[in-house]
Image (cartoon, rainbow over all chains, first blue to last red; front, top):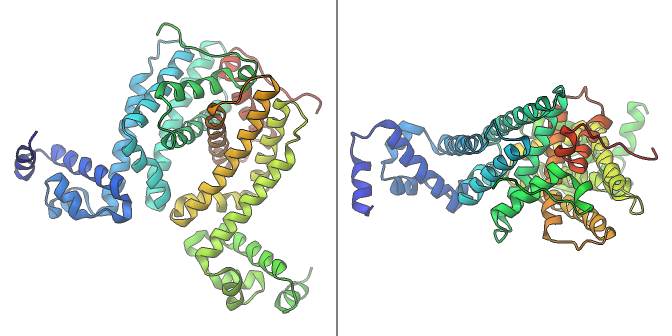
Length: 217
Length: 217
């Protein structure tokens, strides 16, 4: 799309609200990623989006609201990606594997989004940490459901420990993704398989040289 | 100790600097834990410490510096507790187990410190997130050393993956500790054994009903 084509419809009044909001959020994620929350300017977001500042304020509020909206949208896309990746009829290990692949693929494909979502929200604190907390809670619920399905499929009773294990797993994934941002040379499938081996095989098997590998892929 | 005995030496000028600083930091952790960073007042910290505000400023700086010093001190105590708990001559699983026990014991014994250290620093962001990042880096280095020892003791070559696994493990511990703050009814040993089983046995063994238990305890 040329610059002319891109800016013309954006200035038009007839665009549906969700299209306009998407343009604004796309621009905001780009600008926040490049400059950080504090140095990002609403003028630049307005320029990149091709939407006037008053219209941005009217649609999505001021800079703080806009940043929170970015976190919410990126978090929702991440959850959708993971949920799409997991097939409930697959064996538990393959469900977990596909979930991890989807997670690391999201982080890898959208490193800039992940920086906005995670690192910057963490370093900004305040209202953004609540958005992050809400996202983590959703992620834990998602993983917990997978663990409960695994346990009950083997005839075990689900206990309080599955929620705790889900919390541990989500923390492990977040932390490893953060490590990965600083080690972009490691392929996505490799980093996913490290976490899969840790949480599926366990260190006890790994130090003995056992390895988990996906079947039927 | 009566109030008189407690406040008299604190007001005296002859106390060594490290004793005075410890009094100030103890008071600061208490007050920050109770009221949160924003609502904590230097007046209250001064009252609780029995140290005048000008002296606090002279020794440890303003509120932001004081909070950062609290994070640094609590982080150092946590690292020392974990390092003390781990005996390098024990088998790898027992080293990990003792490290996890030390970690959860620290969090359990000092829930308020942990809130200051972790939750509040996370929600405040800014300079505090750098203190937290430094603490996480130290924790990852500590766990990495343990994993490298485990791997080489079995004749494997240590690879880049141990640092990644250490990052995942630290994230799992942090996240589970956070979950535990909201579930204080779960005993320390139980929460530690959940994480131990996840990372040592792996979910693959757990869903088959296998369990890791400490030996020789």
